[in-house]
Structures are given as C-alpha cells and as structure tokens.
Length: 305
Image 1 (cartoon, rainbow, N blue to C red):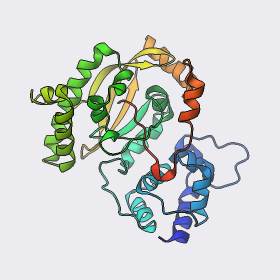
Image 2: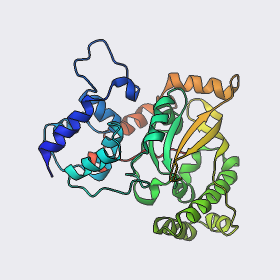
Image 3: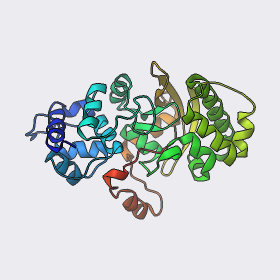
Image 4: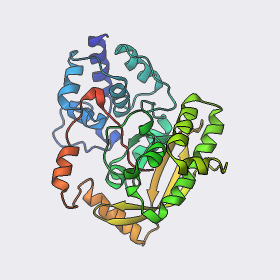
C-alpha cells in the first residue's frame, strides 16, 4: 500500500470539489479551496479521525467498502476510482453491482440535483449504493448489513422486521412486484451466479418466494404507488419512480407526491424533521444508531426502495 500517494490523491480530489457540488453550504469563513476533511468523512460515513489519518499517510489499509464510500463522497469517475483502489492495494470490485459498486456518474449527477425529494441509487438487486438526506429521513439511516442481506429483496423474504416500512395490507403487492422484477433481472443477467445463488437461497428459506417465483410473472418495476410507514408522520402515500442506467444494472429511485395532496404536505414536514425520530424511546435508539462504526465495517443504507 502506497500511503503517501494515497494521502496526496485523496487531498487533491478533496480540494477540487466545491461544497455546492455535494449539497453543502459554502459558509462565510471557508479557508480551504474545496471540502474540509470532516465534510469528506461525513459524506463517506467515516469518523473524522480515521479520514484524517488516511490523508496524513498513516493508518491501516482501508477496506473495499471504505474505498467505495470515499469514491462516492469525492465524486470520482471510473478511472479515478480504480486508481484509488490500486493505491490502497485493493482489488478493484465489479463496476456495475454489489455493495462496493461504483455509482454511474450520470445517475450520481441527477441524484445531486434532487435535493427537494427523497432519492437514492440502487443496484438491480436492490442494494442501496447512495441516498440523499431526505431518503435517509424517509426510509431510515444506514444499518450494518453485508452479503445477501445488502439486498432489500433478500431481506423482504427473510427478515420480517424489514416489512415494517409498509402497511401489512400492502405486503402481498410488494412481494409480487419484487419477485417479478427479480425474474426480469435474472433473465437480463443470463445465468449470473450472484442472481442464481440469491434465487436458490430464497427458494429454500421462503415458501412465499418459491410460490411467486413459480408463477413466472415478470416485469421490471418502473414506477409504483407506495405507502411508507414513518415513525413521526404516519403513513405517507407517495409515487416511486425509477430511472435505469444504460446497462440496466443501476437505478435512480425518487419519491414524489402530487401538489396539494397529504403526501406532498408530509414531504415538506419531512424536510423540516429530517432524520430526527420523535417516537417514544427515540433518544436511546438514536444514540445507538448514531455511533460511528469501524471504517472496515462500514455499511450502506438498508432502507426500503
């Protein structure tokens, strides 16, 4: 691992980004040309001390998850992301999918523009790669999940707690939609082992999934009407839209509501409340959720989509 070159590269990428590029206020007393170290660490979900050590050419070798998060925070293109991995002596992960996937620049650019509505970029297996603050406020902050559990489709059929974000009466609809979408992805990927393992595992663990899979219904989910259960605002009825990358392996999802509707009013309140949980016991839960994870165990948001 080339500590000094990694440190210099991180600083050079940090210096070139304007705060407005990543939705941060410039502030009246900014003394650096680009982002501050603490701003990069916040965007990447790392502790400020850990990121500072990286820029000083010290510290342990960063994991692939940490490098992927830094690539997103610093808005690196594909070549820059690969260079970052090489400097850290890590194998460059697949560019299209998985929890360390590189968000396609076009989708990232659009996400940056969607500051007034919840939005996030996911893979075709519903692994959340990055989300804006309103999406985090709507569907919840990051949770420590890895492997198959990074996929919300996988958790939907294996973890009953994941379904709490939707009213119980809506669960059959979402189950059908998820399975039909996965059928389309499996065909598009053409025998990809990652998809095959997921399907086989879900068939073993969920009779509901197995029954729906055997119907052979297929449909990529391009749009949907959702009712999301929020701890403070109650049930929020929203439209969910999808924009696919050119290869179909990543999607930009955003949530909206027609002007004048209750959903639109709730979204306005959401932007004020932010990620504050005002439900009973929130202080204790929030304190636990707010603890910084070890950088080598950093995870991605695990909310719904």
